[in-house]
Image (cartoon, rainbow, N blue to C red; front, side):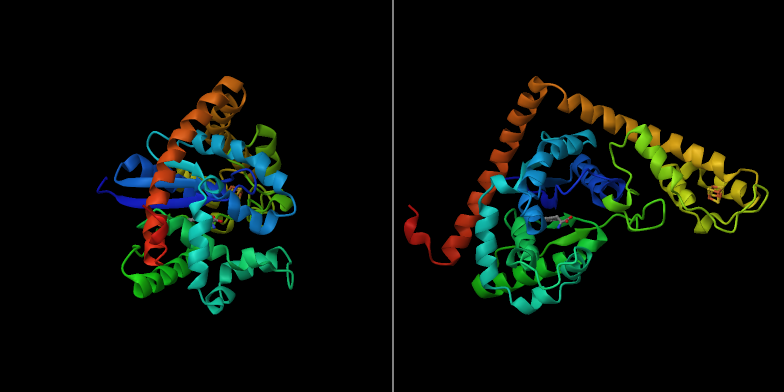
Length: 337
Ligand code: TRP
Ligand code: SF4
């Protein structure tokens, strides 16, 4: 077996991937994969989606292949990483059950990420067991591959803390089995929409990784700039402008120049927004074209599915090895040869 440290991470197939997903974690996945310094396990967390989408499972199902293609389009590669779907490896659910025995409910009730989900989705008293158990399933995802590192967005830190607590308790009760995983964060803070509000499908302020030119136009139109800059000749304050924040992210090499031009009023907001549209288009077009090329033909789909099966087998082998070890620790080994 390889001596490299393990990286494990997952993404929920809740909607089209957007820039928040990309800069918050997926870009990091690709960099980690290409560094060749780790064994990487990356998966689509389709079971996790059911914690909130259980009434409409077809919405999750319809997204799966699309999401896989989007992951390939940004550079994830089943020849370099192990890519798979969580639901296809039954041991995730099995380890979840073992972990649920050693997880005090109080740890879950104080979890701020789940509290946020409950508030955002307005669930109040309608919280299902699966949603409260969300971090326990996430702990199983990571421990099932003995993950050492987990590239995630900052919002996921409370979940990872629970993973560490569960793993620590497991190791204490049954002997050293799992590493305590550490986060790998990107230096990009949570990316707001161009209107300054939290990115959300319903606000139509989300810039998708595979956005069309029209979609980019609509988003940039809504961008909130420096409200003090009413006339073209007014000097601007780029530090409070969302368009500037996006320029800084997408074309950092031109950041200083633009800052000066805005402060000196040598550029107007209309032109500045037009430049942002061009930049976004240039950035997004290769992703969109790559994804389109993958989803159009049935032959390509067959080839991709075959590749995925090979990758999934590797995850399956490892998952079986670890779950067997766990069952032995619970003294269920009598059933094994
Ligand atoms: N909760 C993560 C998210 O919403 C997705 C996820 C599920 C995950 N299992 C994981 C991330 C394991 C890292 C490791 O983004
Ligand atoms: Fe923002 Fe650009 Fe207008 Fe300056 S010129 S306020 S950076 S949109």
